[in-house]
View 1: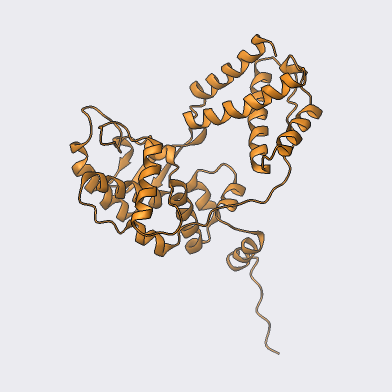
View 2: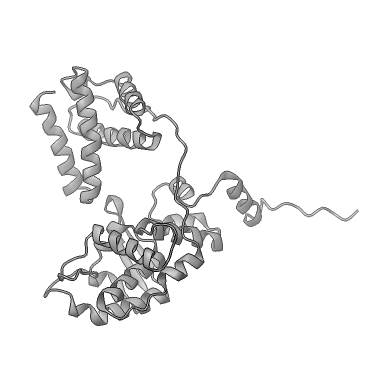
Length: 304
């Protein structure tokens, strides 16, 4: 692949960073996935992106799967390639997108079991006395209360949370903003945190959650702290931020049955993502529909 062709990868990533406001973690994923596509093209002797066709993309998909990559991971690679070629088409570098219509091989979806309500109660039953423990309880309560992504949590600034109104505004994937309610336990925990935050925060630091060094808390630090609290509180399964978001979605859906509302709260563009996320299957959806939709309810048999 010519150097000029390789440069389009850097331009695409810069576009995602500056125009789409993707997080560094997401950008790293795109970079990894597209580097595999580049290696494939070079091995096949493809010297220009415009020379890649749908048949070769299918070969790339099959080869990735043959090397042990699961169906969802192959789908992610294809999604990155599809977005890249959409960008190239917009820049006039290709006349068509060869990835459109190419699908990944199927694979069973494996989702971790969410923490149940008793496990969540045990995790959050922390005697928070020192500032770090107060902070950790506040961020865990907020993750569970509002279903935030990890990247959304660590990017929060003080001005984005209105404790009096019990609401916050986050910027999610694709730079989309959404307003979320904050539960009373999370509000109480956040008030306690804000009362001691000044003991840790550096002067002028806008981040809601800060480290012991006074700067914005990193995603890795949040992951480590949650895993530590999970062990300390005696939970069998490993605790991580995504598991609290998963518990938020599952518990809310169990009590409300409102899939669309949960979709909005999670910030999912596609309701099928929410459906997978919450372990729903069609049978369960049909049951909810039959019980809730006014024109779908089963008629009671007439007395004979």
